[in-house]
Amino acid sequence: MELIVWEWVNFLVRWLHVVTAIAWIGSSFYFIHLDASLRKREGLPPGVAGEAWQVHGGGFYHMAKYMVAPAELPEKLTWFKWESYATWLSGFCLLAVLYYHGANLFLVDPAVLDIPWWGAILISLGALGLGWHVYDRMCKSPLGKDDVKLAAAGFVFLVLVAWGLSHVFSGRAAMLHVGALIGTIMSANVFRLIIPNQRKAVAAMLRGETPDPALGKQAKQRSLHNNYLTLPVVFLMISNHYPLAFGTRYSWLIVAIVLVVGAVIRHFFNSRHAGKPTPWWTWGVAAVGMVAMVALSTLGPKDGSDTAATPPNPNFARADFAQVEEVVTSRCSMCHAATPVWEGIGEAPRGVRLDSPEDIRRHAGQIRAWAVLSNAMPPGNVTQITPEERRLLAAWTDQLPR
Ligand code: HEC
Image (cartoon, rainbow, N blue to C red; front, side, top):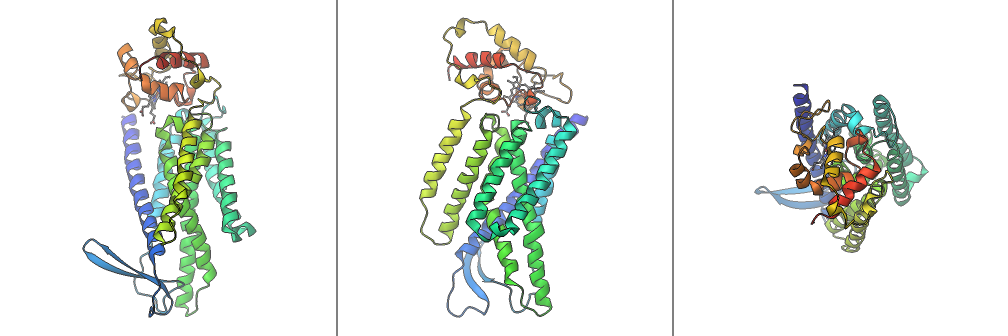
């Protein structure tokens, strides 16, 4: 019963998280586009930097942007903040349900670092809190005066975090935590800076003063960061379904590349929407980055078993399939069976059953992706599969028709 409840909590919280994230990213993309499409013309009201006409849902919208604030505040103002807060809150719940409740399977990998589950959870919380503070300090330091230098420093910082976490958590948790840190930074930007600054501007107006334009400038910088981080954060959040991304030796480099690829793709759309010359080069950079990610992922898992580099073994066809079956039975089928015997696993995970020769053969491709080309399975290597056994699976899956 408990298992069923956890499974549904996982599913429903994930549903919520995806929906809130769509709402947040959707409104963010909308406003970035709106901002970029504003045009100046003669005769705009004082304080208006530009206007845009839009058509949607059977009506016409006439938008005008007041740079600092309108001379008179309207009675009703719509604030955009709950999309962001709800995304973070639901994301944190999902992190807790999956990675804290299931820490021994998904957070800790003793082959990476043998730490108790509670230590791993503390490191996770620490990384999110500390990571935000380092970033925030960086923005407020003299570095923050130069957008390009700040972006370069932020990039180096995130890559260091990715590299560091890959030496602490399982590959899967390491990659997800870089995403969680970026999500935390983005949400905290809204909560700690963008909204408070806007409130200060409104308060100044109500006092009859002109709001300090520095407030808006600061918020704009954070908003720009959020814009360029949107695509990488989504990649990192869905990475845990793709073992070649998170479970291979250079996963931290894949993080570095996706930060660049995501940012240049965003740049393409930002420039286009603003009516600037279209930077077609961004697709060249993105393509090179994607090829590099694929190439890096073929270099095999981290545990030195070099399974990906194992040359095909022509004699294997004659070798006994019984050996493969034995490895899978002793390392996988305690979970991947009709009735798993592993505590906390209620049914064959993701419907993958590996408890009969036919089932093992049927899933050869998946076994190759999850346990040969990457070390995503067994999770945290809880059943202690050896590099030799992985090589055996490699030799077997290698000689199968693909
Ligand atoms: C301790 C239990 C456990 C063991 C042992 C285990 N797995 Fe898994 N496996 C899981 C869980 C849990 C998932 C679901 C992961 C997720 O939610 O993304 C999973 C997912 C998978 C998937 C992914 C299916 C998909 O497409 O999403 C494959 C393939 C797989 N395991 C293969 C293996 C192989 C091969 C072994 C042995 C080398 C193995 N597993 C050992 C628990 C286990």
